[in-house]
Amino acid sequence: MAAVLTSEVYVEGLDSLVEILAGKRVAVLTGAGVSTDSGIPDYRGQGASKRTPMNISSFLNSETSRQRYWAGAHIGWRTFSDAEPNGGHIALAAMEQAGIIEGVISQNVDGLHRRAGSSHVVDLHGSLDRVRCLDCGQMFDRTGVERQLQERNPWLDLADSVTLAPDGDVEVREFERIVVPHCTVCLGTLKPDVVFFGEFVPPKTYASAASLVKRADALLIAGSSLTVNSGIRLLEQARRRRLPIVIVNRGETKGDQRSVLKLSAGTSDVLAQLALRLGVGDLYEDIE
Image (cartoon, rainbow, N blue to C red; front, side, top):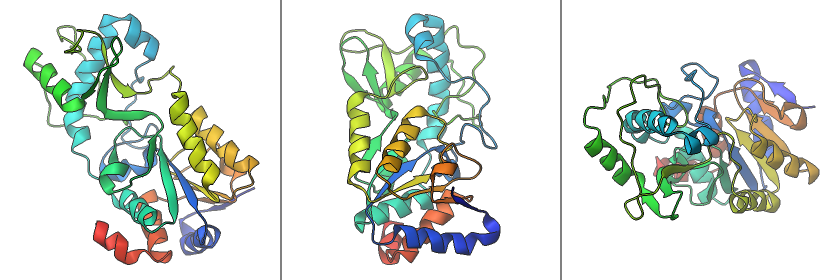
């Protein structure tokens, strides 16, 4: 059973975290909690959207669902794409460059780890800055798709203030007039290159994540409540190999009882302090 550490014993928690990870090759699994300090809410915390995320079956089988999705995604994209990496992202990038971290497995779709400087990133659930044609397989940059949406729907309100969701979507009431984007190669159906609810993580993507855990000596889980099956499977892989598992997350997670240390605190500060205590302060400052 893990020792659960709250803010009252924050310093002791950091000491324990450093002691467990020092000298080890660390694989990192991140969730929505890593990006909250960048202005992107998580699914359950304060400011999180209460709407139901898009289901793959609805998206594939209903034009109305595709209209609703692209209307909300288009309005949310401006705010979502303006988000900047925070101290946690930057600290992870610094520790990777210092050879402490093997790589990051991200359950997020915001691309902030790469923008912070991390080079070995497995986007477990894809990335919103890519759009794929479901008919011919052509991949597009999101910028071009957004331009097509704006040209075809100049009436669509781009509000200055929106309630953003972790997947970049927002709630839209009037969407029936929207003309959804189409593939400029074959006129097929476009879908963001992310895993919707009801979809499976692509086997090759999961294999890359599992390979990263296999090469590591420890697993650090940051900002994830581990409610998604793919995250639990990676935790179980580490547990079967008897790797030390440490969790940094506000609130309970499904992995608390299987970790050797649970630190209940914000990820940005903890990861920044971890980088400094592991001796990568100069590199961290260079990246910032």
